[in-house]
Image (cartoon, rainbow, N blue to C red; front, top):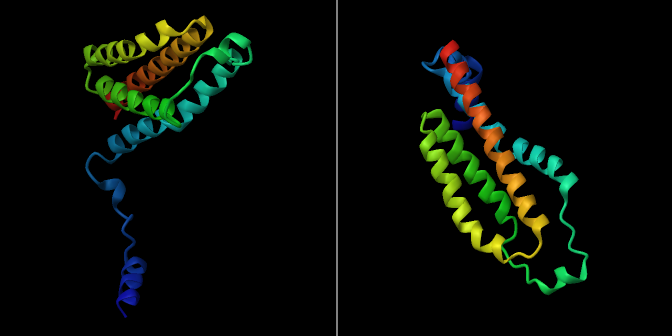
Length: 149
């Protein structure tokens, strides 16, 4: 009976009717779309670009290195980095974007300086810069779009 009443209420007036009249609906959609764009689609784009620069671990000198890390940690770090960068870009806090980059660089510095493989360092740098550039551009486009609404 309760389910019947719930179903009847959806038929009588679906909850999404009037949603577009909600205050700030357009702004929420634009910002939400931006956050969705910087997650998986940006990861796929960066992965596609980096395929050209794939680091191979087939040389005998690479077997001397001990590669340890969390499974998919790089992807999670990338997601969190892009969320922070987009948030700071939308807030107009470009100094905080620089702080995120500096913090990431400090944490990665030791790992990359121990690496004797220059291609790994360049691979990480290309991926990081692509991530920052794409996310900042998305943030700027959103900011400009919001001024038009």
